[in-house]
Length: 307
Image 1 (cartoon, rainbow, N blue to C red):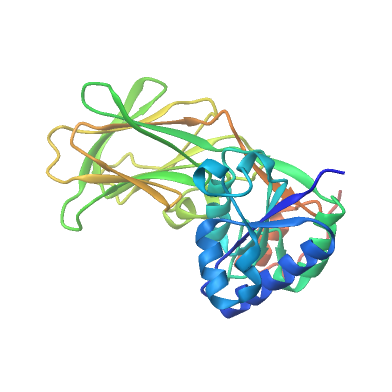
Image 2 (cartoon, one colour):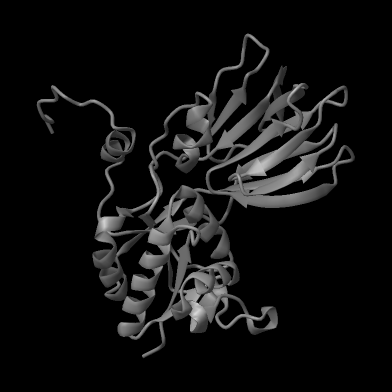
């Protein structure tokens, strides 16, 4: 039987997360699996607990690692949504699904809460989980001459934001190669359904059920009469172009993790990525119930479904 390699991703600056990672690594080893840590997590966890010193490192031998990302079966994530996004970044070049165990507050991407951690690890060992694919975004930045100067991806959203507090930015919004409108604003959010409950939600964008394939486009504090959130087809190309007459500068952020400075005249093109993000699920997910639970929505008076 081939050795099974499970990546453990943890927010190591919290004592409860270090303790949880200890339990997960111990359980994986007891089951004959090989736990793996990213180099950053390895350093931080080893500083807190010597147990982690001999855990295998993620990365090819050429990179100083022990286990290439292609050999990772699954990633167990201990943390909130930010840690889950980091895990998705770590396994992006492989096929491993991500299983989130919420150690934070809202944890919208997490599959289970910390109280069910031991049962979740047992099900991972038994391969008792399903995989759900989530739409991701492909982002390219072009300079005024049309050259691609930066490319990346996002699970939640890509945002074009003003770089200085005192200056707004002026943009042209384009959908499928046709200009839609021009206005001054603090920025623009281009979101997937997964990101609909993240920055998109805070900016007044729509909540989109995960089963809906679409891209949301939401202005931030736009100075315009027509500045409503838009929902476009999943195959649409959304472009945000910074006008040459801009006084302010801008910056591109993807999932709040990767950034790139945007000069005047830069053009940000966002499309659906050909590679989705894979999430491990332990039970059927009812998105309505997740919304009610995470946002503590009032449902008193509901008398039951007619279906």
